[in-house]
Length: 93
Picture 1: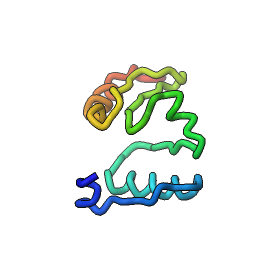
Picture 2: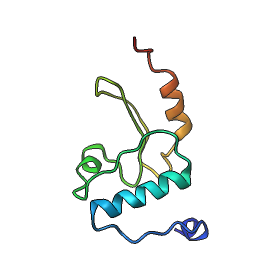
Picture 3: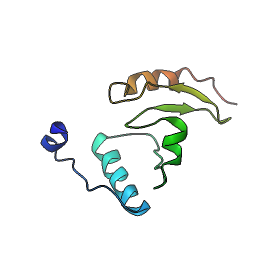
Picture 4: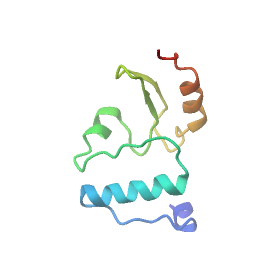
């Protein structure tokens, strides 16, 4: 939390899907993420299904299969490993 304060990255806990989306977009921009990101609904169904809290990276192939996942964060947040998994995906025709 101290690093969030130092980086001026503080948000009120969202209470609507729109607020949650706004927070996610701000984080996406601040972190310079270069790939699409999806935002879970207020019911947190995706988080519950994928054990994504506090953060976790998944790579899902075009067939809908999980082909890579990190350990739960914050120490499992390893974007370089995700980048390697993306590079190793088979080329689709």
